[in-house]
Structure formats: C-alpha cells, structure tokens
Length: 177
Image 1 (cartoon, helix red, strand yellow):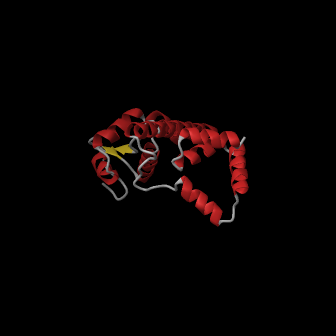
Image 2: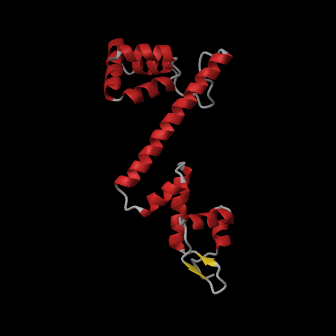
Image 3: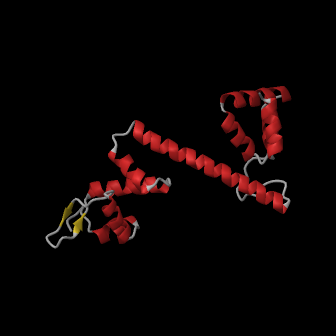
C-alpha cells in the first residue's frame, strides 16, 4: 500500500481493533473504505483513520454505534448535543444506581462508610478545611443553602461523595431550603 493507505488488516493492527470489528463498522456504514484494489481489497486513507479515531472516542464514552453514526454525520449543534446530553443523563442515573448499591452493600456488611482505594474527602475533613479557611457554622450553613438553591442535584452528589448517610443528607438538604 502507498504511504497513508491501509488495508483492513493494517488498519486493524494500527488501531488495536479486530479485523471483524472494522468489517462490522463497514456493514453498519460507520467506516466505509475510501477505495478498493483491483483484487477488491478495502483501502483506507488518513480521513478514514481520523473517522475511526472519532468512532473509538465516542465508543469509549459508551455511546451506541447507531448514535455514533448520527454524531459523525451531523454538522454539530443541536442533534449532537442532544445525543451527548442523553448519554450524560444516562451516566448520572447509572452512577446514582451504583452508589445506592454501594450503600446497600455497606449496610449488609455493617460498614459506616464506603471503603475506597482513592479515598475522597470525608465530611469531617471537608468541615476542617472550611474552618481553616475561616468559615463559621453560619457561613457553612449559608454555603449549603446557596448550593441547594443553585444546584440541588449537584449538592446531593457532593454530599454523597463525602460518604454521608442518606438520612443525614436529607436533614442537611431540608435545613438548606
């Protein structure tokens, strides 16, 4: 092959994907070869490689192949942002479901908090940092009120990330309204 052109096997090796994956992408219309040789072998060029990199980028985000085709074929704007926003919403729901499972497992194991390899800040450490920054109890209460008012879902996520139990989170959020 000429410089900048690849057969399906060469493209598979260069992209660390299987040949069958590339052929599947071809069948779906996601990655059509630029040309074919006289022996009817697929030939891919730099633009095809760039498109494949975009396909892999979106696949790593967990976006379904059908929607990847829509993302690649649209001119940007509304449709692409709708697809990405929907994926983001799906991930948020999955994360919430997984956090619930973690809490349930901790309850069964009678653990007070989630053991994490890369421990995030605890509630106690967060309060210590805020106090060191000069915030009083009233300042911290006002901080929670603003957080709850401006970003209630993010406030919930933040409190969960500190390992606070749901009943205490409910009290903090109620007092912040």
